[in-house]
Length: 365
Image (cartoon, one colour):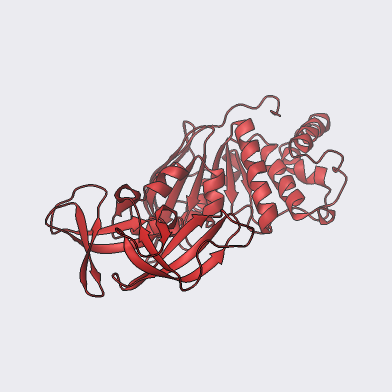
């Protein structure tokens, strides 16, 4: 359902944004372009600068340097109420003494919108968030998911140019969080509104965003489509933060196509996905689901032994000890047996291998 009179959102452009608190550089020379109608997620650990970036877009913080543009307008020095933004918080921030309808219509009332027009817009939003007939209910009578829908409706009813989502699902349990990911994403797409999501939850970012910007140390390390940055991380940090990864550090061999890594009996040669300069130090990342296991010790690959096996619903996670490498690696395998079962069991001898093209060369950062 599209809301009448709503146009596709304006784009958001951050250029050279810098913010310090004393000697601490929270955000460092950050550039970010969110195109109109796009949802971009800022993903990273606590203290990486993602929330500070969101607060500068919202107008709660002023950048020390750089500009924030919404559409064609430089809003870097405008107060929050003049930026035409909607914002959804983790804790909902609803007025407990006001009904659902009063909460949704609060921004319209503050803007001086006439009651008849206000009621019509509130009714539209109740339909949009599937809370028809609940306008007279107080927030305390709603579930967590319903309260978050009210918070979303309150943000959207003022027809914002950009929607800001600050850890919006952090207070919900797992099953409800997953369903709300679909609901918020579906609404954002139907309305064509530009949105910026801040989260530390990799699954949330991957599920909801057109693009994911992985942040650390006040900088964006990589930005791109979720599948792209998952499959082709550009750094060790991105590879390890966005999912699990087996990391190998070593030196390129004389043939240029192998990586020599330290093993229990000396250097071990691993195939590289592409030729590189002999002698240089490299870091290789291989996702656990890209690794293959087969029973027994066969030709090719590494002789290994299963030392851990965990059932995780649609896949099993294995921890395998590789004597030649003197370390343990992780392997994921899609579940293909009875519920709760694992294909390989503790103590079993297996052969571990992966295709050279499934490895990704990443920076050591």
